Length: 377
Image (cartoon, rainbow, N blue to C red; front, side, top):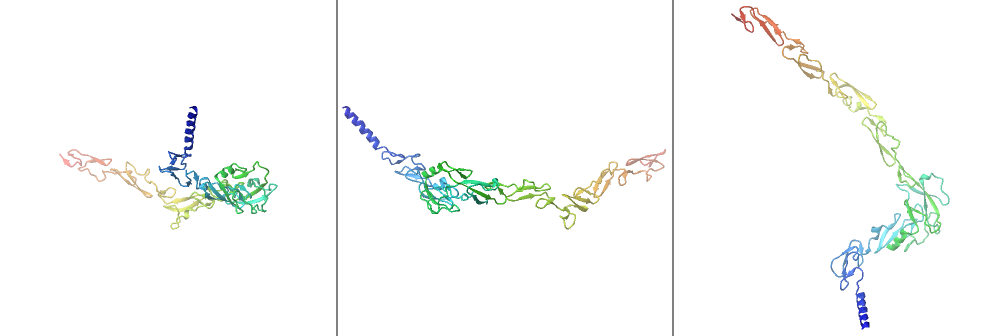
């Protein structure tokens, strides 16, 4: 009986084992799609054996990268990447570069280390060149066996599936290996590996105007010496500068004074308006104003009323003149003269006239009365 029980257990185990679905699938017939991590880069639509892949992904479970070049950009140093199969690619390397990912530098200038239009030139093999170290960079390269004097490969395949033209194939696995392989990068340039001695090659960058540094990465600040004069603002450009000058100055460095008096050719007075003449000064000008005008450009009508009209008169300002509107009882240009209301002898019948401000009073003799002594008693 014990043997029968054990046989049943073994049979149940075999049934479960034999009918266990492969990863990514489930259901009685193991044909139902499972979402991530089953259908990795896609979605299940409920149909049998259907894992609908996202763009650039393929395979029965959408786990194969159809655009490895675009997703990972494996080719180094400007190599051209071509998708050859799911999870596979091929790098076409520039002359002087090799390896599955164009990671092997056969020629120091091949990675185009000189930036911003700089020109790369070899300087020698064994000893450093006698050039200012601020403009020289060193780079480790592969052994020169099978290389021409300029470091070009002599028909040697470089990398898996490579050829003499520098076209090298790779897979996702080989890409990961090359990332952790014998060469690494420091500042964009390879550094020595620990797999054995490798010769050192030097190069020098001849920088385009406006750039400096070992690889021409530093923009020279042409404004550092403050070339703009007379308050000009310096704007640094590539290999040059530009000065934004105040209105009173002109020239490349704001060194020339602007003659403001020549700005108005018709009058010859420049910015001066009500003026006799205009005189140019360094960074400025001076107007000689006509009578009654003032201000930097003689545009202001001077107030000629100040302290002019007397006895409460109202002053009207004119150009280089004024007019006083006198109060009652006063006259004259400045209203300083009291009008004598008794001058015309307004009092009659011998009455005596007494003058007041704007008025008068009659003192009548006996027998007469009234404002003008016109009434007799």
